[in-house]
Length: 303
Ligand code: GRG
Image 1 (cartoon, rainbow, N blue to C red):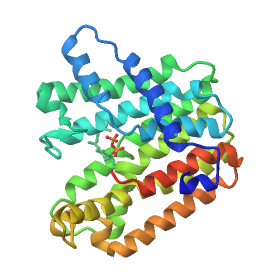
Image 2 (tube, rainbow, N blue to C red):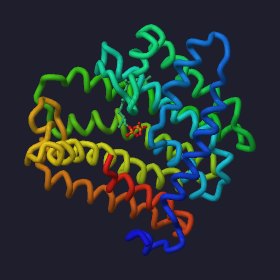
Image 3 (cartoon, helix red, strand yellow):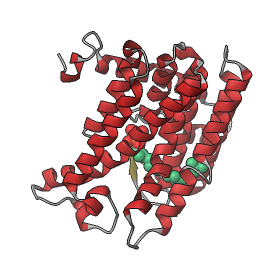
């Protein structure tokens, strides 16, 4: 049995993740049918269905279940979050941004379809995300759907992901402080994870206090996600090269290990994990099992 199975002995986390990912993948497949104009729908489907861990939509469904909601209530919302995440990756990979050739083990969207189509595929996925929640959500009170849509909108726009990206781009080649690094990560990465969890709870029928509790949980795991990413960048590269210092210590990119040292970055990750799990103490332990394991999954993941 797994080490973290001690807390919830009957809970098989790998099975939980696989089952939820299958549910999400099916819903995503159905959310963008192949239709005219073929090229744009093909480009949208290419990136949306290219795999990925589906962490955000699974968090959304788990938060819905945490507060006693049926997963079906949050499936359109979970798909919307993954659509936004995917479009941010498509745009992030463009030559005018990070200029990457590979994503999720495949050529990036602009490499496969051209830059013009990749921009449009991102735009179309962003627009579809909001339409999808509004049209496909059933059995949820309209005021909850509107709140969730507003939450997602603010997580994506100029106070959310876009803010993080703008600051990241303008910090290139400059000395970045720990506060600036945190601002970038909170906005580029944590905001969408927060929206995923908060919107899942809203759809599931959470009261205001519980929404704010899961928000605190989500803020911790959002930053944790990025701190762990930075740590993995160093440790994975060190292992691959058989050296003591990874690529991030050698390049200009600011990371937690670079700014605070690897040991302190690991301590910070532990602290964030502890705080996230503490927030779950307010909920029924059986219902909180998945989010508890998801926090540990984010903390201990190897990719
Ligand atoms: C959102 C309107 C809008 C524009 C985009 C380009 C941009 C603005 C923001 C960049 C956002 C970005 C790429 C953040 C990094 C997020 C991140 C940690 C990605 C990796 O997530 P994983 O590991 O990836 O969950 P998979 O492939 O598993 O889904």
